[in-house]
Length: 204
Image (cartoon, rainbow, N blue to C red):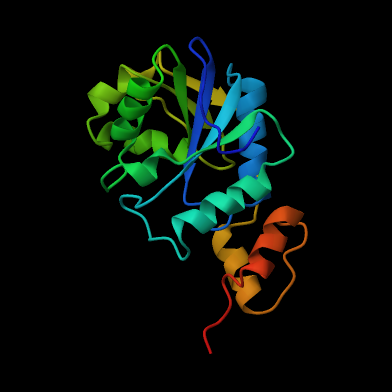
């Protein structure tokens, strides 16, 4: 089955892991595995962001980033890619994505993976009251971050463990640009895709 065959069955439980993934790295994989083990879900969908609100815009195309994720998660049958954001009008607010997914896949239970640092600003998310009625938040613990659950979310939050992971997509892009090795920071599939498609190289 293709990584792009995202067609969850009614009654299944899916964790949505949203991100730019430019490129995906081993920290992303560790978080998805933690959600799968501790989040009371059946599978994890990597939700590739098209035009993320309030964030730096991607350096590569949506198609390339979806393909990079596909290369990164190819060895785990519980992981899929969800490209629905590419079909929605920007910006890609979480509530709009959730409502579209629930319309397309009735009877599926969705959770959303976030970092513990996002708990403090959760009440500022777009149309948060509607969102709170529809999903559970799987909150990844991060070292040095105090995680206080907003009162309204106490019944809709589940914590999942996450060991500190120092790599970032920015660091990987910089290393590629500088001609340095990224072995051990991401999967061999991602490294091969970056090389074959000449991504993140310095413009001469």
